[in-house]
Image (tube, one colour):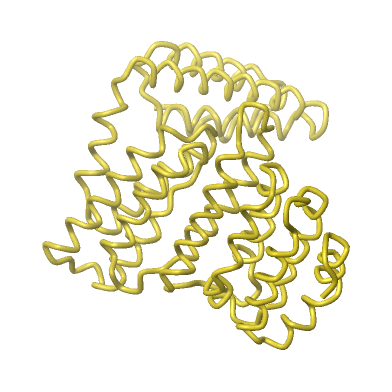
Length: 332
């Protein structure tokens, strides 16, 4: 092989594809070692080529779990500067996260390598990272976490998720609901003392973790899924405890009232738009149904609801397209 950077670039550009597709693990590893030796001190000019070779190895290797058995693969990553290193890590993780063959792994070497690479990508997130980029990175790492399996050792799986939550503190994900569901299905909802303790721990982990998630919509969805999972596993105490923890909290109540106010404003806009788009008849039916819903599910002793119900009723009663036959049904 030619000496210097020129020879290194030629090696990076021409040899890897043939070696990878031949699936000769030792040859590929020796090639990577040769590349590291050839780069020397002129590593900066080789950054793009190093990235290409690493992505080429990942994309062309027939057995993903064998990639990290090559002891010269990750040392190549260490040669890269922070920005291109993070981009390379992202591309490697995307291969595993979106693998077309429903890839998952139980291999400890692959697990440690994926977490190491994910940590590099995670630590590249900073105050200048835009929210959409954070969401994409969180989605990739979350998928990687779910690809790592511990077969039927549910406790080890939960411990892994707890460690992942502590490791990837900048990202939004909660994985344990699926684990709790798998446990419940495995025992057909007839829990032993051990499995009951485990699914309770899963629910507790979710309820503790969810408040740290930035997206309000995601938090709401996860609370719902976690409560449903807890009910499925007969963890009624976990479901009720959430009401105790949050139900009377002033900050929580202020947020709920704020959301209700926003919802009612949008309802008012929709009522007005209905008159413009669909006609007065559809508007009256909507008002009529809204009044019935308020009367049946709301707490009329709560401030604001009696006034709102009365306001809606006046709109129903005085509407020019009201249906008297339907209104008779509302009379006592």
